[in-house]
Length: 109
Figure 1 (tube, rainbow, N blue to C red):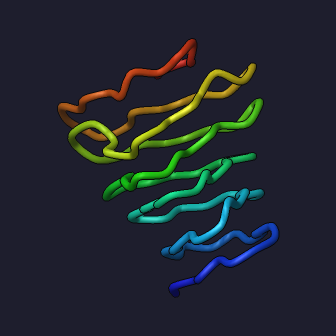
Figure 2: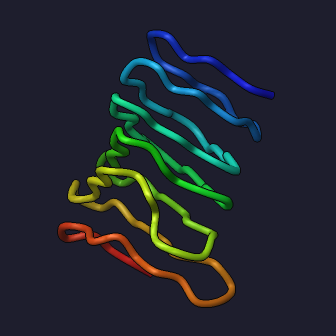
């Protein structure tokens, strides 16, 4: 499934690919193979798993107590990855060598 987000708040639990055009927030449990955020900010409020690519000229912000699972080789290519809210976790969980993106005060596992 491919979803075009234009405004509002997305809530769902399913595997999908998203094209984000306005700043959005994800609330729920998401597994999205490839996320590209361009020119806006996407906020992860709960759990986001990305197994192919995290890219774009926009930003991904981790909310308090949110989890980001990164399951691909290489560093995330997204311009801004903000993970400094209390209790958030960025989990690099690829079964092999990975490169991390510099983060300010995260919990990295």
